[in-house]
Length: 84
Image (cartoon, rainbow, N blue to C red; front, side, top):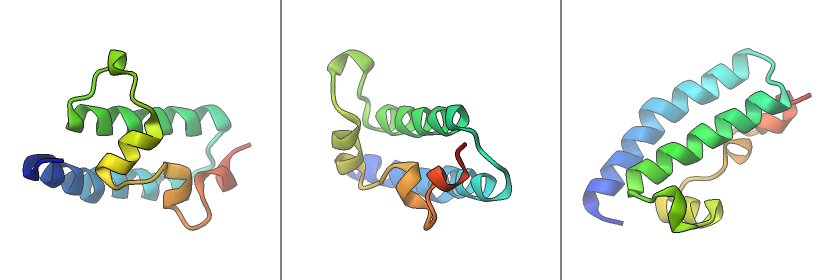
């Protein structure tokens, strides 16, 4: 990952993920909403890295490249705790 990508990931974690995690703590999320948040999280990471949908790179590989984790694992209680 380039220095620029690293900066973008750090900005994403500081500005976007913090808001997502705060929002997840303040409301009850349904399973569909949890999936939508996870899809948004992965789409942002793919955009930062310049990975297109037809490159067929797995989400776990994207997470390894950016050094982030899935949203369900990012919160101590996990987003699954809020899912119904």
